[in-house]
Image (cartoon, rainbow, N blue to C red; front, side, top):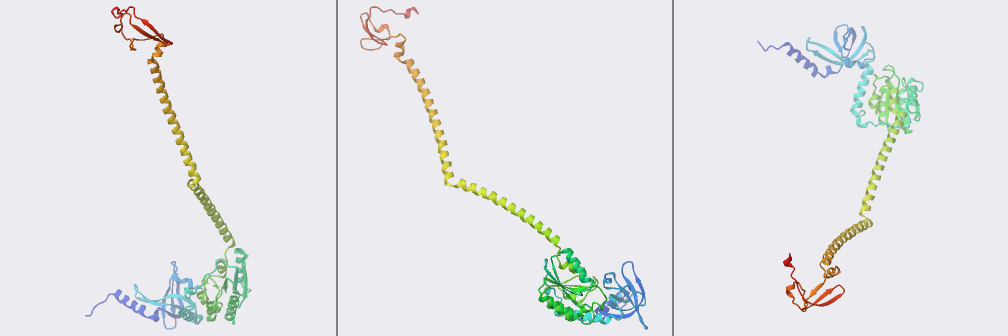
Length: 403
């Protein structure tokens, strides 16, 4: 007995075979819709059938944005998607990416073929995209002169910024000659050098919008030196022009919103800038004014005149201190001198003489200090304040014996 494989392994192996097959990963399948069910999750489950067979299909909610109609029983459709295996049930089914009603398949094939060709040439590269100017003064418009698109653009332009000049090139936007008319409009407006060009029209069927899927229109947009905003149909409509343009808008109204700046917002922004500039200017002015005062003060303190004044003031202070200390020293010395004078006056013989005392000297001129130094008949000199007296000793008495 050979090796036995699990059911899961077999289903996974078959699924990998489907995944590796390039034809099954991008395939168009034509058939009639049967057993169509819209699930609450948003997914659509249905079956495609023809006279000989049927194929289970599912379109997940994320892919329904490309579905422009409601899928119903009995419709003949062409489904673009990939075929893969649902491992749990061991069944293969078609996972739908887009669905169109039968009859439009040829247009979608042309669309996909041209899209791949232009993408390979680099017409969709982001490096080629030109920025949309934020504050345009002149806006060119290539669209029908009688359609709702131009009226929407005019109304939005008046509301957002009535000062913007609108230049309309009335082009054919569907039917025979429409691609050539759109190309002429782009080239004519490009020569007038507007700030931005809006190319588009209102909604319609894929046949109505097909002029914007033509190669000549795509190459005219690519070659235009002016930035172009593509605004074709509704939000779910996507054309080749959208891929080539510098910016895609979901609708003509949205294109006007993107192309024309809001004047009130701009003025509010200018007022805000003005306030910021004024605030910054006043801050800088106050700062530099304070800095200037500081530098002037530092310069004043460092100036020779200020230094001279400071040194002069210091000298004056030193002079005052010196005079103060000198006067104090003199006063102290004078006070001491007065004390010494007083003491000297107290010790001066003249002071004693003024009080009636006398200075007695012997004949030798020596001061007489005791009666023991004299004898009777000795001549003594008695000095008074106003003169001297000569006296003779007649007698002497010892008074110490009385004490």
